[in-house]
Length: 383
Image 1 (spheres, rainbow, N blue to C red):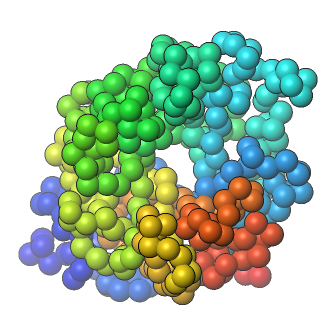
Image 2 (cartoon, rainbow, N blue to C red):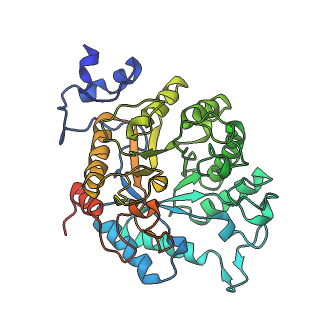
Image 3 (tube, rainbow, N blue to C red):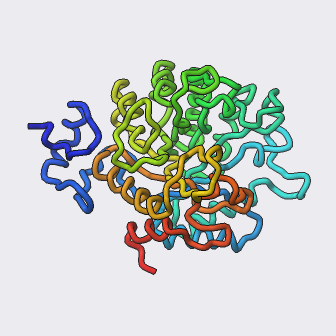
């Protein structure tokens, strides 16, 4: 029977999805080392390992070089890097010049793109954070611009400048959180921004791949925050489907193993399957899902409970589950593409007293953590 194709413990899939992948899974064994199904959905037949960097905050050239070197040595193929609009287009629309330092604002981003090329890595550019001239809301730097067309023009400028060198663009970040938007979640308004940005990027570079904004995992019902499942459903209702090539999602495991089943009342790794169900509901199963932030947090036992926003696991669990989660996804999710761990290394602006410090693959001094070594081993890279 068709249902026998699915492995025990694999995510539940509807009949349409099974029909699409059943032939590829039928002869595959389940469990560690099992053969992956054929990856026929666009943007899924890729190196699945990626990671987030904060290189726009880095000053010393050798640290940028070492970052790319260690990412490459770990077998990671993708680097997710923010290109903050507020840093680039200043002091006014159409100008890209830093008057304080008397230099082009493109310089450090040109360096990042060149380093990626030199090491054979691919970049995903996150585009958000309007400059102050573009927004009347001066208290919330993450708020959208007053004129969405200004964002479209900026996105087109970035896409055009790096045409043939940088192909992947994420338009905005976590708009289902009020603080990342206007103070409330507005799916239809985000779709309006997404459409303008998509059209302008494609105009500048028809070969560009546009990622939707990843949505923050939460269980709220609004109006300040809205859970990602309902937000995505409302995005589709507002006409989002034609305006992204890849759905971006967040996948935090919290304190649960990768096999923990999905539920709208649970925050865990497999929660993304609920987003996939929304895509299928809107006949959009032909698109890939890429993972913007993928992680388990290994804060120490003495970390105060109020700091544990992402819960905590041991460093061994962090290393083991990061590998296991990706392997499970490659086996069970033919729609899964790149998994960008949160995060590779921070530049020294997150203190050890904060739980977010303990996501890193390497310390600020570049000492590898167990999770870095586990990824390196899993990717097949040799020392």
